[in-house]
Length: 168
Image (cartoon, rainbow, N blue to C red; front, top):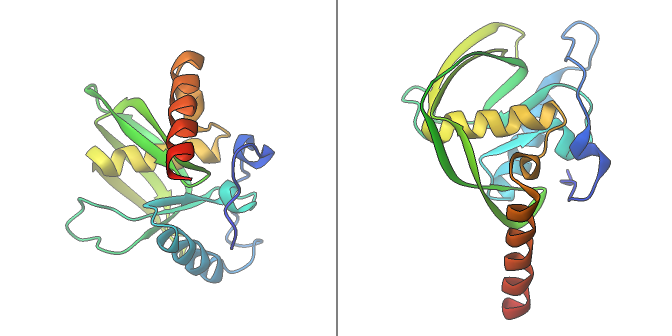
């Protein structure tokens, strides 16, 4: 499975909901997405990043006690957003090497369907909330570069080019 790299129109695509009755069995897709995510040293991967037009992503929780494996998320929604905001560095598999400081809620409550089409609710904090929101953004056609000003994005790109020249 190949991950699309910026610039690519797929990174601005709004996904259609996954239909468990009409769409193909999601198990092979999820298996491939998890393998691709892990092979690329990521903690999340959205369908748009692999040119698949359905609302699904996988992510590897870092701080959930009863989840040590990647979770497949279908048709997610955010039902509650914490009031505390936190700024942290994010990267993206579709933007290799690019790091941006993104301000996001410290905690969220999300609903989604699991790989069996069963409704689930997750309360997420810290890096897990950040990753979930980053991947959720992908399904909504929002790239993480849209979450910063043009000036900050241009500065980060200039820094990346300089780092690539030194290392390259």
